[in-house]
Image (cartoon, rainbow, N blue to C red; front, side):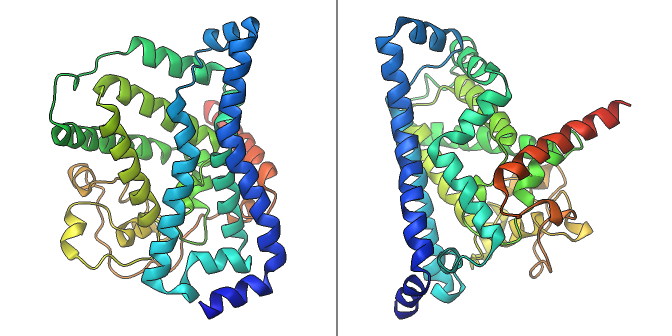
Length: 330
């Protein structure tokens, strides 16, 4: 605790500057949907436009930014308890010495504020909202609607969503989308903030896939919430430097040690350990058992990332992605 308080005193200018930015991001995440919904209710033209592009606000959407903040803070606390404060992400945030961690914070605040979704909407020229609305309204299979046991529903959701995550993650590692997904892999500091370090185009694809599986499965709201919370904690903690000591867990889920292999720069680790459940990596031949710690994580063109020019980096990713796509067609 003494070192924690000393770090706050030493870096109080950063702490005092960051706190209102974080509060503003959370206020935007909660307040923006309410403001837009209010405009839609009061101004018929706005309401008609929102309906036309498939945007409808569920009150539960307000829980998302609050939930993300809660899961992240608890995960950071668990990591600090397990590693000790001196080796924790909390300390690296407070001391503000790592450009990679600052980039992680940027993407975290972008997601909490709702700006990630807004940028994805703008990049897709509005088709993002239209597609999500179309999926929710038209793809209405709800195969789990007659399954009353919530434990069975949860198991089905875990299997289906983890398979979807595996397949989408593997797609992001192909030449088609790697330039975009590289944003996530450009982190040079492994920590619980990394689940939020995703380009808006990456977020767009994951959201569409999530909407599709939600419509197909049709699980109860409580089951979906339980899965979302469990997966949120898993994604944060699997990106921590904690050591999960129970060896048997490696045969059930991809552990932090196994996922650090996925982020490694060593060629023998490329395209390994994509999933949540170990079963999918084992089934598709991509599982790699962790053997010690990777020497280095990140990407080859690290000069393009962690420059503290956050929006410029984001835009240049799109330009490189489109440039490679044109080169591929040529």
